[in-house]
Length: 199
Image (cartoon, rainbow, N blue to C red; front, top):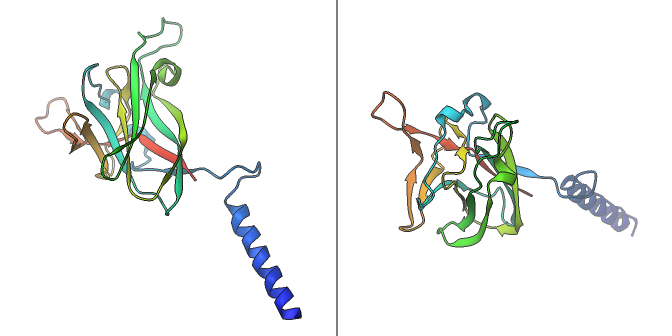
C-alpha cells in the first residue's frame, strides 16, 4: 500500500512537471516559433526584397513541419515593409492576403486586410505578427502570403532551406523561391522571412 501511494505521488508529480513545462508563468502555453530561414538578420535587406503586382496570383510561400502531432498554429510572423517613413504620409492603402494550406495545398484559412496596421514600421523592415484562429496541425502545412504590391517581403539568402516557394493560386503550382539579382542572369535562391508560431 505504501509503495502504491509513493508510486501514485511520483506519477502525479511527473505529470505536473510535464504540464507545467508547457506553460509560461502567466498560465498561457509557451510559444514555439517554427523557422525555415537561417536566422541571420544581416541579410534582411530591402534591396533584396521583391513585390508582386496587385493582380498577381503568386504568393510567397513557406512549408512547415509541426514538431509533433497536435501542434497548434496560432500566429504567423512576417518580416516586411510597405515603404512608410516616419514623418511622411502613409503609403496608399492596399489589400494583402494570408492563407494557411495543408500538405496537399488545400485551403484551411484565408485572411485579408489592409497592409497599414501590419507593415508601416518607420524606415525599416518590420516584424509583424498576424493572429489567426487556433489550428491543430498533424502534418506539413504551408503559409502563403500575397503581398499584392503593397509590401516588400524580407528575404534571406544564407543557408537556403528549400522550403520557400512561389505558389500560383490559379494553377496550384509550387516553384522554388528565387529573386532576380542585378548584373546576373541567374536568379538567387532565397528563404522568405515568414515563420509559424504556436504551441
